[in-house]
Image 1 (cartoon, one colour):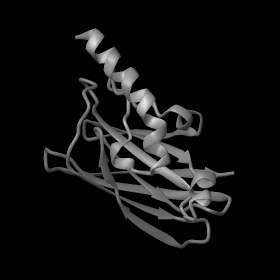
Image 2: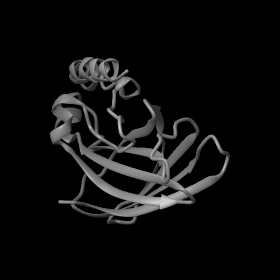
Image 3: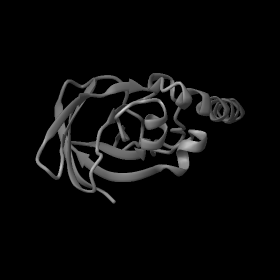
Length: 159
């Protein structure tokens, strides 16, 4: 079992750069072996930053923010960051997949954007636009398989 998991992780690591280049975020693999949010996206790993972790009604929400501005600009796109959230059971550390998640981001100038997060290999994610330096309010509302609606929020500073 352990050899199979290691082999799968190695194969996913080699496939990740191609997945990012195609911006097909639904196929971006993640390594979740111990239930913690870990990046295994080749060149993306050095761009990511754990932004916030919070336990809400027994569910640990772990948010990571990736600066994708350069790659997106090369493709003529305006999005600057990719926000991913992983959900785990706070007690058992098991991944919790399925359900729905939405983001609302309030920029330093008080403008707002909302995004439905796409399910991705046990987590959720979306590309967002945070072009100006400053403090952004990030709010996530999510409903997992248990049907209970939860929310988490944090501040993220673009430098």
